[in-house]
Length: 485
Image 1 (tube, rainbow, N blue to C red):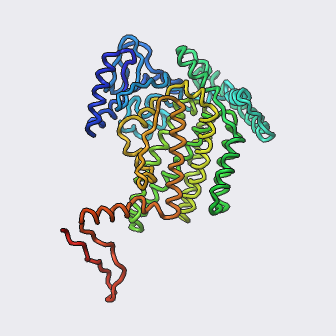
Image 2 (cartoon, one colour):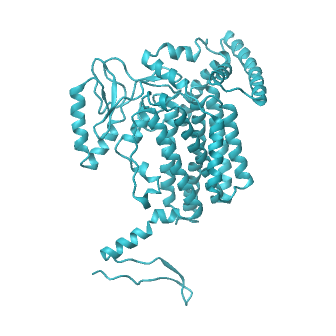
Image 3 (cartoon, rainbow, N blue to C red):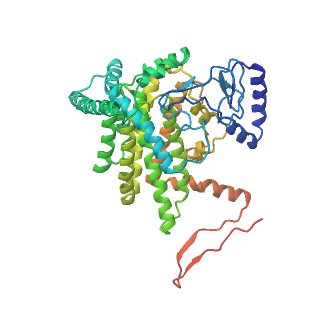
């Protein structure tokens, strides 16, 4: 839920409502809906969506949101704590393509209209990328972050500039003949010209964040050496190494963009598993593991929020990053379909490696930038996910807590808290992937020991599972039960 930060009586009333809501689950639902109020959407998807800085109502459903002349919004969690969200959404897809913002919860348009709208946005972004030399901006950002490209990086940059130059001349030629509309301002200049002083300050801090690739590699090697375990097969190792290579070479010195690409690809395995498990069920081949689909959906829902957090930080702002990440995601989807069809355990092992690498990366990033991250407010999408009060799906993917009983309820007061939460989420994914490989996921889902103990204590009648063939060659079921007392 969002409120005007400087409307103190309104804040007090909503804090009282939040405390009352803790008494029942029905109120939690209303808090969840109220949290969908969103910042205003810019005219173009290539610019950030800023939290309103003037009075008046915001577009969208507007539930649970109050504004006054100052208009500065804040998030109110179910504990009654008021948290200031990040003052702008810096992503390319801010507005209608972001959770909890414009059109949240509505059905999509038809595929033709969707594809044409996206083509128009991406075409303009592509033209700007080649005409205003986006590749040079990327190289400059990497140099400012202290990342120096190797021989392969320099060769790739030179080849990319040659291709860009050809397309830039073609774009100008088509524009002069009125085939394409006139292109005006470079995207970053246009974006930064519309930001307030506070929004510019946050953006400048985001651009100063760093990531030490060598430290991440050392941490990963140390973790693998301590864990031991079986070595992955050559195809799994090749797929994993290629992903890490792209992240290290292409995204050196650009950690937010790197995280966005990583999260884009990291969602694909969950799509694969949900699709194939549904196919097996439809064909009647396998239904005993249908519960896994619910766990994998909760994992994918978690990764979606990671992705949107990185987008809100500007990770998807450049056309080249979107082109690479989205095509890599499609490639990995079909690669993992083949792997899962042959060996589900190998597919889970690949994802264990990816999630372990992600946890090491986020841990290093949070430690390396702690002081800076603690001065940046959390994005709105992070507040809605971690502090909405409705954490069913958040709990569902953390299968390890079923045995321990320790339910996570993370903090989300600063961007540092957000990255610590993401790091811990990735560690939970690793545990689930290990459980899927060794078969213990079945015990986590069934919670067989707890069920047996409860049945014993409460004198509940239990029905054993199906038997195999009996002496007469027909399938029977044991009917021995405990009598109710």
